[in-house]
Length: 193
Image (tube, rainbow, N blue to C red; front, side, top):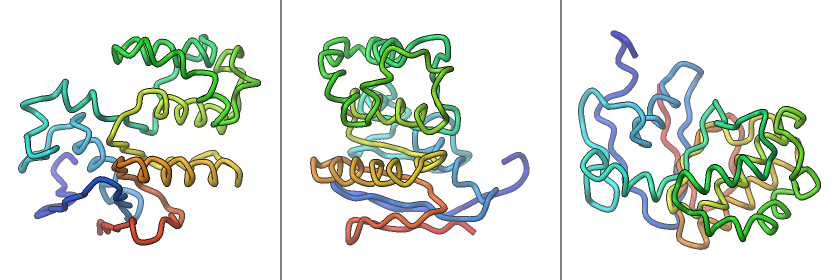
């Protein structure tokens, strides 16, 4: 970041059904690494490969298989929950996914808030809208920056169960969290200093 080297000589491989938790103190480069892995920030050196190919060479194909949850949730506050999710599906070229909206909203426990504008939701409920977007878009790779932020105990359990289900279905998850992520043998950790 700027003139500071956050990490170097970093290499790892993940298989389907695996989750990588990136750990480190604030400012250690966790978010920067996630943004590099998502193809949102270029790395100064090195290559990010997805299924054996450089993500820079097949950017749109890679982004079609990626769901990214960052610090900025990417929600339009004046739109309702449903309108935000329909827009996300449309942008991804997945208009047909809208038929799954009722089930997705029920799963993240927002079915009773579907027609409210996002500005009327709590921070935890907004986080659940983004979780609904993950489910709706059906991406293989989830990159999640602090997915437990602003969630109550039930929300934390929800994220954990969604990640477990995604892994069972052959998905891949890379996340940061200052909380323990109890996902058993599927969990690998990478510590940034």
